[in-house]
Length: 272
Length: 272
Image 1 (cartoon, rainbow over the protein chains, first blue to last red):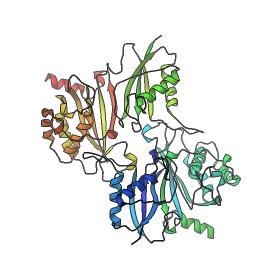
Image 2 (cartoon, chains in turn green, purple):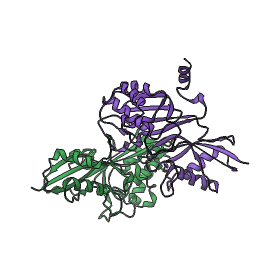
Image 3 (cartoon, chains in turn orange, brown):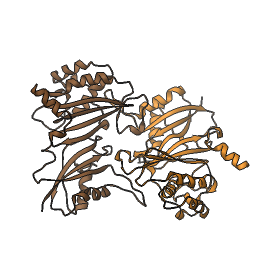
Image 4 (tube, rainbow over the protein chains, first blue to last red):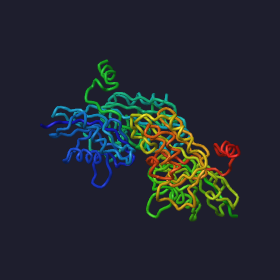
């Protein structure tokens, strides 16, 4: 009997040429499909939700695949994760990709087309001391960031706008550059500054360009108010630099409005 | 005028085939020498203190090189580190190798032959939750380690012994397998367990085999007392597994007994 599995996947994007399968490069999708195919004994192709770029990480990527498999749902993650890990003589070496959850879904469910939005987290390390052991996991900014100014700028980005100014060339063709950002928070935690952004969709490099722009606000190089003008200009040249990929984490994918942070507040503001 | 520079170097060993220069592989020494040669405008070869293996990290590797250079000592680190870093359009991307200190030394000083000992730290992450983002920076042990038992075993390793049991095949030929461990501490800090070991020299894979043996003690697979017998046996087969390289950090190199942790206590025990 045909079944439809939805996987939640976390990965360290450092050594990968991004999510999407490529013939001769290490990719997350390729690595996952290889492990699934070995475990299932036949070739498996998955539908991923987000095509994350090289160096970008994930806590909550999603992917689905169908097939007539006898394996119990609750065993699938363990078996695949064993295949994704290394180690010898009593040691376990954790691999860069891991399945954290498996759910069986109705046959007409599709991980990508049924998703209604997602959350990304961008991690900035904001201290004079550059940490070489953190270099693949954050954007290291030495000069102090003013988080209050960044949060003021973030307010102009929340809501439904044409975000052409925050789109890099080179992504997939899209019908429109209008997107809704339901929530955008900037928070300091010790030496880290986190940008947490939830929306119904993101243009190519959008979170990284928003981050670069907010960093420039935090450094006093542009005002919070200028971000409103930047959006209205629809001009990529007016926005800030593209923050590097290694600070970006795909946090969550949503299939139900009830799960989405900021959704109710946004809806209320639309009605008011 | 000929000058002699001593560098302190930290590096993330993840992407490297170890310290030692190799023709067609990325190595720490090769990367450092390339940056130094570019900065100095002529070919530079350095003498490193420790030939760390692939995947092993360092906070305090040392290396020296001589030459007739006009550059002020205090500027050398900055210039080399700029060369070792990446980044574009206003962003800095920290590289995997960084010079943390430069000292000018007498001409007859040699970073390796004049060193009298060193400290390694081995980092174990001891929690059920495997963290994919930590996988290159520690040894993840899921079952709870009894640190008290590990420390009891460590006492048998301190002092001057024939450590043939803790030597892997494949290293350089050594005249003797007798070494002195001045201090060996096992400490828990949250989810981490650190093994901190200081000695006058280490055999091939010695710290990693000691760690594997102590982990087996901590898991209750062997007794603290059995470690004494293992050392006396001089038999590699009687010792524990070799812990993976990614938990190992070269912490300090010493040129002066006054700097060495545990040195005075050891000397006093020898007199008593």
